[in-house]
Image (cartoon, rainbow, N blue to C red; front, side):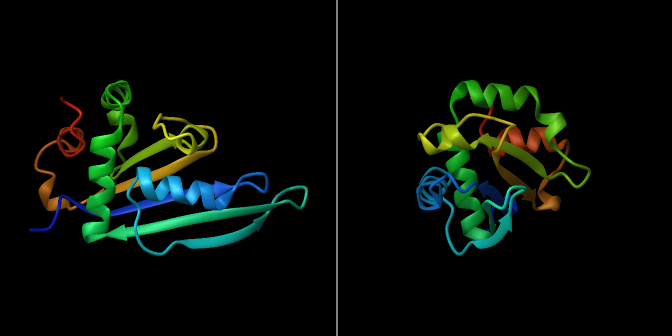
Length: 144
């Protein structure tokens, strides 16, 4: 049986002053991201190097990320996520999360907006029976 999540996208920017390998290790360990990544080299306003890293995961790899989120998100973050769920879901029932990248590097998961690690969860639509918020509360185990 396939899991309830069809695909997961994880993306973030790496500034020239940041260690891309350290950040990659944390993303792979804390979010259970597997497989290849796409890396685009960008140039900042002052000519500095910026990397845009993007992971697209499906199947068991996507399920691993969802399980990592459900297991590793602290209770306070789960509460905050549950309270703001409706603002994070688009018209296609995709859920958008932004984790604080600097906290992630230190090994902690917190929601953040400035320079985040962006996560998009795309559900198998036939499994979203009623409200998408209820679906994600169950999948991410936000209700205990």
